[in-house]
Picture 1: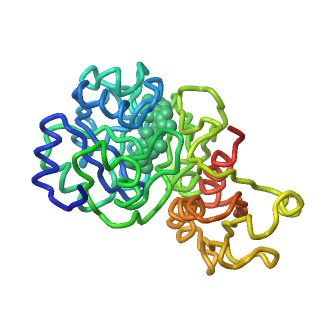
Picture 2: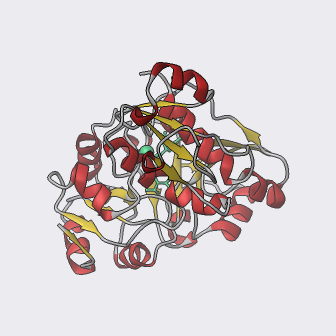
Picture 3: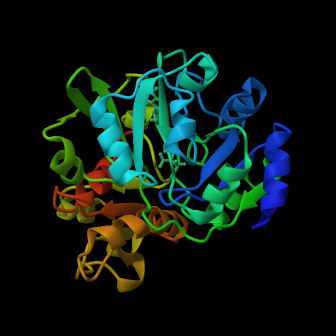
Length: 317
Ligand code: TXA
Ligand code: MG
């Protein structure tokens, strides 16, 4: 069921049931992060391997501090500047967080999401919410309640409807080792914004099989149709134009029928492009075309996170 009923959401979560929740990045599939029974269901419903740890969501810094052992100075700076918002911090966990949540890792991924409905829900609850993106493992992430319903609607009792996500790509994930901060997943907060605040950071998002951040698996966020990047001429030698759909940044491609093309942002806004990315990929996946070609954006700001998602969505499966 799709609704905005917070009383029902609260009741279900207290009873170890799952609820899909809106965040500013993508919709999450939420359960009580302190309950192994609820967390186990998250893995089952998503068909997600248990080596892939979950992000824990809370609504205040005080609550977050109650389930981590340490909060390094750089992490505090980041939390104060970017929470509530699209940044996930990796911090040493207290035993209260089940090992199932962190896939046995000593750190837990935490964030305060920026969506009024979900913040209200978190305020009511005495426990934090573990929530991966509410899509089947490996498929395009959902940015509306309807996206969630299309794939998980039968499997969960409630999808809280918070409209379409304002950011549209997942949170940036950052971890700390002594004085060094490392970004493990590019996302809604840009590398530039982070470096402005805490100085230079490492970016390490290319592990292909490293379970430390399976959002970094080579193939992820992928449509069912084959997605190509790179030289469009080569694709045009293999497929007639009417069988190709395109996802372009600012302008349509002259060789392809206009009806097959989706434009991320005519104004060339990265923010608008990120917000449209997953919904447009889904739309293309449903069009009567054979393959999708996507244009890469300039490698800066949110363009980097968008390109990261496109590259993983296009990886050979
Ligand atoms: O924006 C988001 O982060 C969304 C919304 C729902 O909050 N959530 C999300 O969750 O994208 P998910 O499960 O699709 O991606 C979480 C990523 C995974 O790649 C996982 O490997 C990584 O976070 N992760 C979680 N805990 C970790 C840990 N302790 N160490 C390293 N990576 C971790
Ligand atoms: Mg995901």
